Length: 607
Image (cartoon, rainbow, N blue to C red; front, side):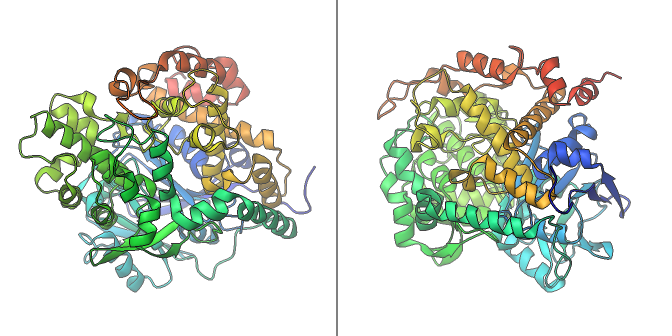
């Protein structure tokens, strides 16, 4: 059954060759849109098509796929987002970052569903995209500027344009450098900023103002569904009260009281100074006002001040990474370390966890004169030094896995597949341990976060210490998040909305009825496509693991005392539930069901 009009069409891409400073357009069939949507899903499709698993992440052959989703710019709730996909220099996996802001809206207004940047400029420069095409500019006066200064300068050079930029960290090749667009929204993890830096690409600006809005098949129906969805968001206590009132930092006390806040490089799971760095304290001492991504009714972001400085954040993950993980209870220093990362263009999670790793190496006597747990000054100085590439910061810029290995203690890196774990101790949330181990992009809570069912009781409360029986719930979350990243919609909407609302929104935009189960099947296809990429890149069951500490060292005190993660039986259950063999390989029947058999053959090197 079709709706009155049809807006589903072939996907239009802008292909930018940095080496030759040329560009052209291409189209992908409607079937690609139906199978992968856009955003993250489209990025995974292109990464497999272009065999990026065969290229070095920082080589000119690697690609950056900038892709909004089919809901971007349509007025759907919290849909002002886009993804960037590449092969990560930090992990070697397929990787996408997802960001709010107006950049994705601007690209869609120009009639493009994605922008693919390949090759490398001979000298630092930036790319300008307008309705007339692409222009290549020298980055003199931009290269070397921090993120806020770069964005401000580009506003002068390109009035009204939206910019995605890198800071000094990306220019220097820090392996966890981020990409940042206007309003300070970041594609923070995995080092995609370093990929831009390796291409001598300081920024991509998009002038979409005055252009047409993305097509919508049934605007009246979309308007009604948006009205219904926003009512749900305003009625849900998480999206209507907790996040608007305190932002994501509301979780500090929640996780600490559950005994699931990793502390001092994950040696403990309760932080004695949690109250001093909580969301409540942040609001009392540092918050100026709320902020929000374009078109978002939740408004979880914060503008803050600290020590005579002002800026964006910190979010919960940043507070934890520089706070509990480093044993620091000084909220002012934490906010300043966050600002330092924002200026340089650094992922705060990897930065904080890598500093914590250095602190433990110092305690072990392997890093003489290094930072120590509780040193508030060190977290600020090391964030600044890493962005600048000076002193110990030059060593920390490779991330904790490589850094710890260089000192002969790889087990002190709290990472999975080379990417640092975020702020949920899986010894107090066993399903989260499985989520980390099976994440397609490394240690990550955004592929699937078991915070809802294991801590908050959303959609239902489960025993957080139980080992088995969680694979199905986790898989559903992983598939749903793949959909949200591909539509592209903020994950926080899922606290109040179910998949039927996303299906109805997409149906109204496309003019083609999409059932909720069809949408979940697309999510499963995207997840398995990413798995195929990683297998072709050399990843397997041995990489679906956790740091030894979390598997072998029981929590010493607090509500999770005595617990470790018993991962092997959880992993077996997960693989069976996924339709994979016990080596973690999708079965032929699963690939056939998901229409991925051909891509699997290509990824295996078969003709």
